[in-house]
Image (cartoon, rainbow, N blue to C red; front, side, top):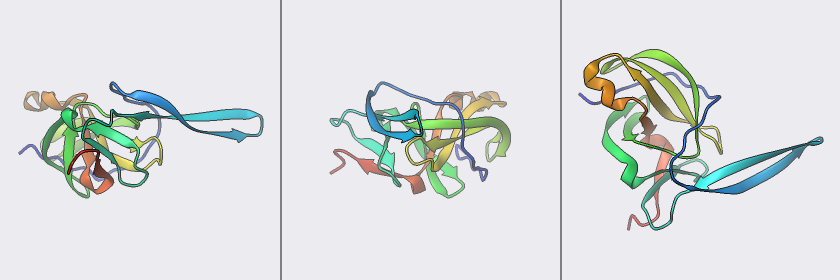
Length: 147
């Protein structure tokens, strides 16, 4: 089976990106320190997947590898690359397809946990997942040109 399941969640740290235009989203002032948040926007000529909670772009349809994965909240998709996503710390988890080192991923714009990134697969047959991202369908919507 190519399905995996994980029940842990959390968020902090790292980042990931692919070819996308980055534009200033917002800025806020905390006392004398200015903090800027930047959001990547995928080209509008492509079908994209966005965060269900804040509509931030997450992935281009061309980066979709598989629709046959299972997350803790139902079906999930495997992507080659994503945008506007941060990574938590990696940890070893036993998933449906065996032991993997994975890091929870979250939307950088609204901080919702979306799924996980495969950092390491211990079984040779699962190595193709390394560096790839799982996003659960419960947290994303289709945007741009799906009609």
